[in-house]
Amino acid sequence: MKVLIFAISTFLLISCGADQLNKKETTSGASSSSPISQSCNCTFEYNPVCSGGQTYDNSCIAGCNGVEVYSNGRCECNTQSGEVCAQPPMPVCPQGMACAQVMPMPLIYPSECDMKRAGAQFIKNGSCN
Image 1 (cartoon, helix red, strand yellow):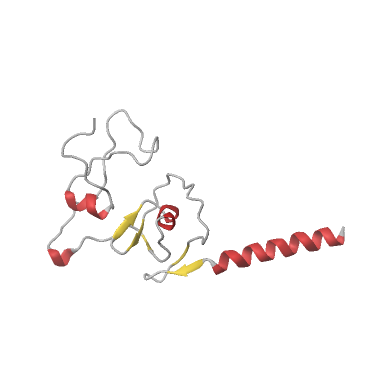
Image 2 (tube, rainbow, N blue to C red):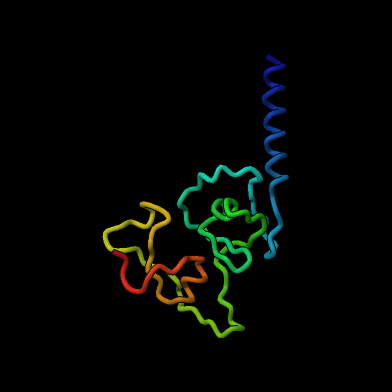
């Protein structure tokens, strides 16, 4: 019984220690976790992170795209080039669809700036149908 308890305790300590090794310091000073080995089986939770001017829906998706260091939140507009985004920059789901149904799915952005800031790819002007 003592051996079993020791084995479980050792496993938990090693697991927790490995999690700390995967933490990266972000440019904003906050610590974010990016697993080294990604299965890329991410949830559709919208908790945006920014890396290199690209906004990802969440840290898992960023990690699946090879991103290891990021800051929490959406990327800012490039104000030096004169870009100004509408506030709040929220995409609209096509009518009759829930945003969490199927990802990635087409979204309607209020401006090109918002689309770029979200890291989305242009498909066409107008409604999604």
